[in-house]
Length: 313
Image 1 (cartoon, rainbow, N blue to C red):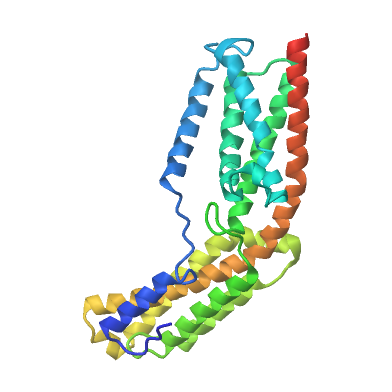
Image 2: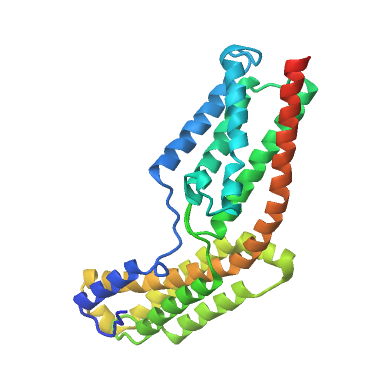
């Protein structure tokens, strides 16, 4: 690891390279892949189009394309079972694809399947048994979206590995070492006052207040972290106005030094924020999992009842 105690551009560039190489060194920015963005746009357009055409009766649930869409959509929702089975029987070769691949298809079919069913029913209510099946399906989709949100809080990225507390502690330790190195830098330093404010933020965020208290803490965590980041950068700039060596540098050199320390502060705050939310979201995810599976089986049962009623009566 490169420790910077001088102000040369080469060493600051080395510091920037180390910064980019370490996952703890950058702020928590989640970038969706292009295909995911395009899929989301296409899904929303399809939803809007179907809703606008719901009174045109272009499709019929009883025959033709409308009937086929119901079969395909229902089949997709049955295929959703493969992902939890793959997780349960991880080494079973009968599933062909990896758990990560099945997770991708689980999310895709969990949206496309219900969308096809909505087109099947023409975005309208029908008989009692179909309405119950439709309500269960919409409840499952809503539950899936909530679960996806919680999943993102305890995993790295869209399909990333699970976040571990020990790993987060290592990330925070790395960021802390970089900040300590910054404090020993004559050209751009972190003052004792700024370091104390960082510690005060960490103690406030990581303070335990029970499930309800942590819930309200999590709600405000994003805003409070951004506010703390802005305030700390303000203190950093104020410190440098009193730093004669820093003021003697060119504008480009000052920006290079400032950007490196700013990234270290952002990395530290990001890791503290992730640590604060991890245990809460893990507990929330386990509760969600207990509810999501019964909702899914309720959907399967009502779906079969609907199919049986349609073809029998």
